[in-house]
Amino acid sequence: MINIILVSIFGYLFGSIPFSFLIGKLFTKRDIRQVGDGNPGGTNAWKAGGKFVGLLSIGLDIFKGFLPVYIALQIGISEWGLVPVCLSPILGHATQPFLKFRGGKALGVSGGVWAGIIGLWVFWNFTALTLMALLFVKDHAWAVMTGSTSLLLWAVFVDGSAWMIVLAILTIALLSWTHRKELSKPPQFRPWVGKLFGVSDND
Image (cartoon, rainbow, N blue to C red; front, side, top):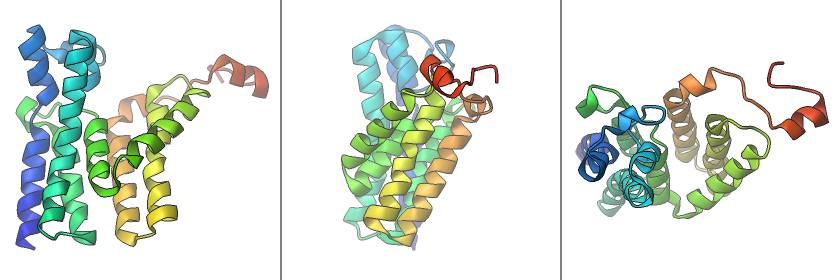
């Protein structure tokens, strides 16, 4: 139990390190929260500093999620003990105590957490469902939530473990919370969808 608590605390603190914000400051001398949607994450780092800055920031965000899970597995933490460990870096990034609690959307961190559990499959599954959703809707937040269901699909149909199903549900809930502003608006459909089903963005 003590190992679970210690690794979870480490996960939260490590997840709280605003790598994208720091990388943005280092390479662009700008506050990336003044760019795009104001999120202190890799996407705005990319917008502020270009491909190198963006990829470095996204890579570090993924690493924030992966490392605590990797450590936990190495010291024998498993199944239900992994749930708080996995959630801790996501919560750390989402709350960002070092940035006056102006948290990020935690997508990269969540990907890193799940990569630590099921490997690189998480990125392929997520990407496939996200791109499929983007064929129908314009909103990236709604597409992200569709892609996130790949976690639950994997947990239910591939792994089947109760703890992983619970973790998937909690991860999706946290991502829904970090994207709550965008998700408060109904999805905007692509023009071809409106023509096919007789709906419009104003419906």
